[in-house]
Image 1: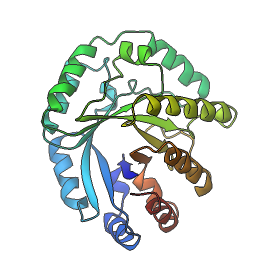
Image 2: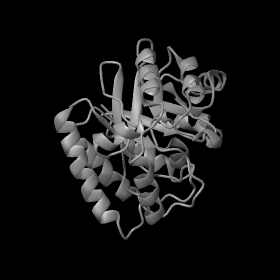
Image 3: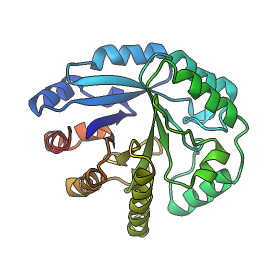
Length: 264
């Protein structure tokens, strides 16, 4: 599989150490770095690019604007994607950022509220992504939810030659109580998705906490390996992993070595 790594907090990373570990374990990967504008991205691209690392942009918004992109984003926010024309980029289609502390019940209620509303700028977001795809290679992150709901909320974009769909199979986020059910459901969803489209890719995690700061994470590398084995069993073309900073803050040598065994 092609290896992709997300980097939501690049300032936390010792990139010299990353390069050294990649070289030592012969790991090659694409790393998508969270950034608010093209100037910031160019800075990270220059700092991180290496013979083993290809850097892509992961555009994000301010928390006030929603942080992620969706049909609920304003046209002004969506327009910020345009400056990344010509770059490899990941467009994260997620419900707008919420200040609440994560819990299964709160997440359920929030998603229920969002998914039954129609994003006012759904078509504008689709049009913008289509225009960008003429000059950029794009990965579109998507929830493992029924397409009908995603389309209504502006959280869906159809895969094509220049736009690759990446479905978030984050098994660790829910509480331990519901994790067995969530894992079973995610596996079923992934199997159906790749049967429908062999080009679809998947994200796994979390190795470390994200922007909400309360998400569940892998308690061991063995849990992570089980998810890697599952993605491999699907014969997926690529796996994206959240995140490189989390790897470097744990037993980085061990995690990088394991990941290298799954690459092409």
